[in-house]
Picture 1 (cartoon, helix red, strand yellow):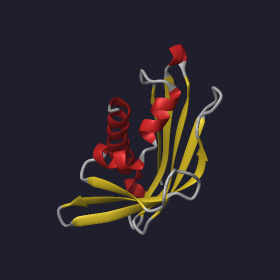
Picture 2 (cartoon, helix red, strand yellow):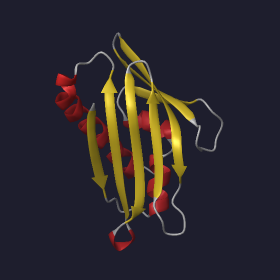
Picture 3 (cartoon, one colour):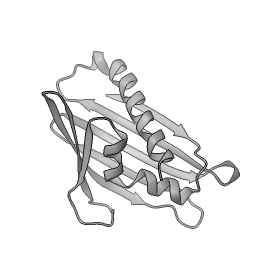
Picture 4 (cartoon, helix red, strand yellow):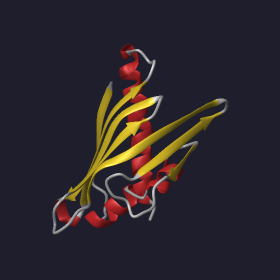
Length: 146
């Protein structure tokens, strides 16, 4: 399993950083060759399900996820969202935490535990490297775009 953590301190208040990171269809525009479809009616809560579909030529796979923890930031406290990856190909979990940081800015942590079925553990370092780059770029885009 490839695990990694990304941290950012965008020039945004906590609520706005949370909003930008947890509007699931926006992730499709931030991750190349991917579109995201929410499968359950809003608003987001525990039990919300969505699927990210990625297509690169003939290679296609779906990454279905379910929100298992949903605690938006409130009263100056942190927000936490945990996603369980429930696909046939991509497994693991992701956590997005947004808390108050220095100077009124949000402090964001994105943690992933990622496994690709049938990919031997010897490939975990490469998977970690690629996933950090892809998710880091996506996180930066999501936080930059209103």
